[in-house]
Structures are given as structure tokens and as C-alpha cells.
Image (cartoon, rainbow, N blue to C red; front, side, top):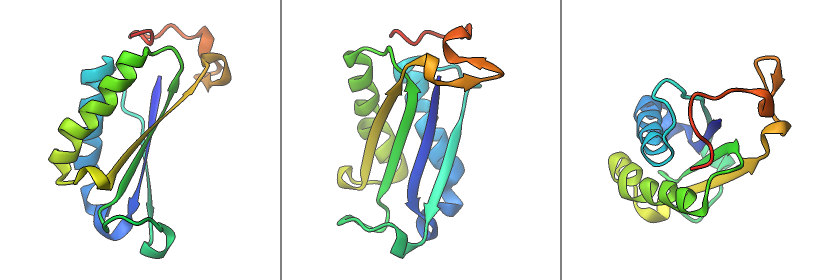
Length: 127
């Protein structure tokens, strides 16, 4: 399981949501083997005065909230995919993209009426 939160400036990213979502999802599918049809993305777009950072106006933060269990190699592969593939696809410099992976044990999730540890996922988390 993985959910994505995207933070950026509304005036820069509001018309590019699909492009961002496609690039981010391609990285998750490629690095972690998530299914093509498992896309859970939330855009938290902010007014310029609500995103204070010493970066350009295009600064983007992508937070991946996921079940714990992925190896260090898999987490590093995802971060590398963001800088090798996602940043160039969106025209971002490395300084203007930040990626945060937040892991939580499956039993801390409630999905489709049950605990995450009770789900039978169609993909592996222990990659």
C-alpha cells in the first residue's frame, strides 16, 4: 500500500496535476512494482505565502506514505527514480524536488473495513 501527497504552489502546479501524477506513479510502478491501477494521490496545493522555502516557485515535495517492509535498496531505488525520471519529466532541478518516504506498519491502517495487516494485496511490499 502506498499513498502519495504532493505539496507545491497552486499557481505553478494546479494545471499540471495529471502530469505530476503520471510521473510519480511511473516511478512507483518501476521501483516498487505497484500495480498500474493502484494510484492514490492527493494534491495539497498552497498559496505562495503558505509555502515558505528557500527554493524556486516550482519547489515540490512528494510524500509517500506506505506500509513498512520495503528494503533499503527498494527505498533508495525509488528516491533515485524521482531524481532520474520524475524531476526531468517535470522540468525540475534537483534542488526543487524533495521526496519523503513515511512508513507505517500495516496494522496501523484501516482499509476496506479491515486492518491493513488483514489484507491480501495483489503485489509485494517486501521488495
